[in-house]
Length: 555
Image (cartoon, rainbow, N blue to C red):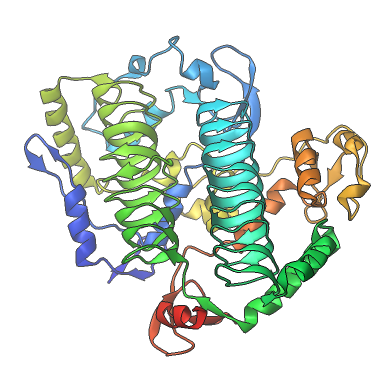
């Protein structure tokens, strides 16, 4: 057992981990550079990577190239040059202009910080988006608004980690869903409202852990069922009568259904974790995968460990928020897409890139920032293939001695302050705690007041007309102001859902609470009493079965 250098907790490094690290270890100048065992526990490693990713904290500022007003993840007081997307991708600048020699009298991270602070940064991390300006970390999007960490979506609003979905609003971790509202950790659903951990369901409301179900209300843990209400089959005719009562979802009806579902859930067994059509996997929300251990929100992946929100991954260890197209044989990466990548942040469509940020469509880079379509570069300077290998080998040898080799970028190198990033969503800290681990902190700034008259949201969507689009709403929880967009209003009307009384950010944090935590606990099966790993802590009230007992009870 090892002790985490950040939190002090004990964690295990298995022989499988060491073998995996050996497979991922690169070769330069004829020498294999072994990746050392991690110095932090898996949770602290994950926290470190997340502290580099700002998705939702957006600012208006001027583009440092053209001077026009732009939207950016970087506040106006950040010291970087920030270019709008089109200008960053344009030909009016070249990252090679910032190239420099490596100085062996300084350590690697010190020099990398100097480079990374002067190379222009892209205002928002998006690629191939259409009419989706208010998104970030998105790929192949059309007509989307306030969607983050997503790919291949159309007409979606207010969501995170949404893939291959259309017309979905207020969602978290959805795959291939359409015309859905308030979906969490679900796949292949259509026309559903308020659903969690469900697969291939349609036209259902307030369901959880259901699969292949349709026309169900307030149900938990059902498989291939129809016309059920609170887990009881009522038949088509009776269901249609009940559905008329809940077709139009008012706030009071939403609360009633949620409370009833909670009552149903406590009486029924829960699976230890949500793993579907997968082999030899552990974690949660794993679909169609093989040999993925301690992984979460993973689909179509194989031979991986410590994956988080990383679909279509192969042979990868310690990765978070990789693009929908997937990564292969990567280590310790965040917001990445490619093959043989190590310690990278926002490196897409690239191969054999290590210790680099904001690089695109490149190969064989080391310690680079903001390069596009380049190869054999170190610190943004061009080398021959032979000289590149020799120099990288020499740098890694120095990093081995300094203890930098294998480690992710330190908190101090994050482009954003800790409370601007998504790290607090999973690892909330106070200011003094963030500063203690080496992160920066941004003191809160009062939001600008919105123009318009205040409007008290009624219980029923039928009591609202388009005049609400000119009104200002105030969150019943946080007091923050927000407005309703035309597309959002049309969606609520179509889905017959009451106008939300909470700010979009508050709704986002509510969905995070519905999503299972990225942790496994040791506990016993409530039926056979064998030891299991579960997403429910021993203190939880839920009845938890091992997979074998759960399936026997279910079928």
